[in-house]
Image 1 (cartoon, rainbow, N blue to C red):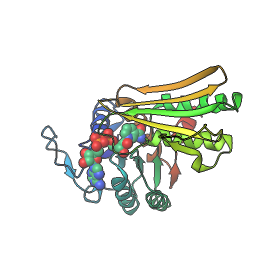
Image 2 (cartoon, helix red, strand yellow; image 1 turned 30 degrees about the vertical axis):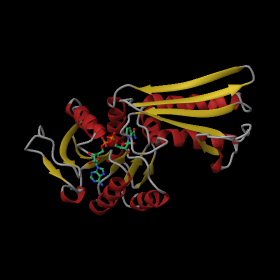
Image 3 (cartoon, rainbow, N blue to C red; image 1 turned 135 degrees about the vertical axis):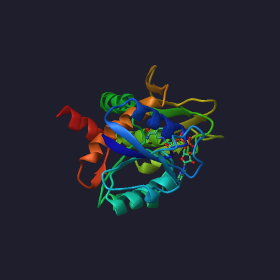
Image 4 (cartoon, helix red, strand yellow; image 1 turned 180 degrees about the vertical axis):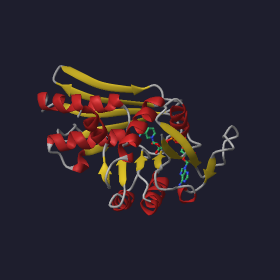
Length: 257
Ligand code: NAD
């Protein structure tokens, strides 16, 4: 059984991961880390800390769903203690990404803005749709719950960047919303639209529009358990991986071998 330390343990995703650990015989919850207070129903036999440094030992795996500040803190603690990390927090700056890459020189770190199998399948389908429809306009629409901190979502940004790369557009071709007399849409533009409200878990649509017809690729996450299950697959992978920075695709390619 792999001992797991969950960073962001009081949050929506942290709780989903803890619930999933409870029904998977391959893992045991070792500790929760969060800057928020220990939840009232937290098992008193389990450790709770505000910093992973206080609870990590070699042999553990950290699963983080908290946010940019926590990602960098967890990556540095993991490097210090020789513990692999699965990281799902989004909204990282270039400097944050650099800090994570540095930590990945000494431990295995797997980062993904989306741990669902459905999004992975959507990205594969998108790649073939883009080759079939090289001239069509692409817009990305995402919907998330009202408390989400970063916009657009890390997944929408990843999809937008993939489209830009496939089409040979500049990184600046991502256009975040439109307002006023903006004129006709240039070909080399990818419209990004973030909708916020209610309790949407995660909804991403890639819309391709051609002359007289259009096509949508859409993924809807209904329950956070979809991300939690993917993150635990990733935890199993990093537990035996050499130092380095991995993507979620690496887990699925390893499973297919
Ligand atoms: P949330 O606000 O419900 O929970 C975040 C938790 O992290 C909170 O309890 C907060 O107190 C804690 N936290 C934040 N910064 C911290 C720090 N520096 N140290 C310790 N604890 C800290 O948010 P959520 O909906 O659970 O999402 C968390 C993150 O995961 C977000 O960045 C979100 O975009 C991302 N997310 C990723 C995926 C994926 O598949 N990769 C899926 C869903 C959400």
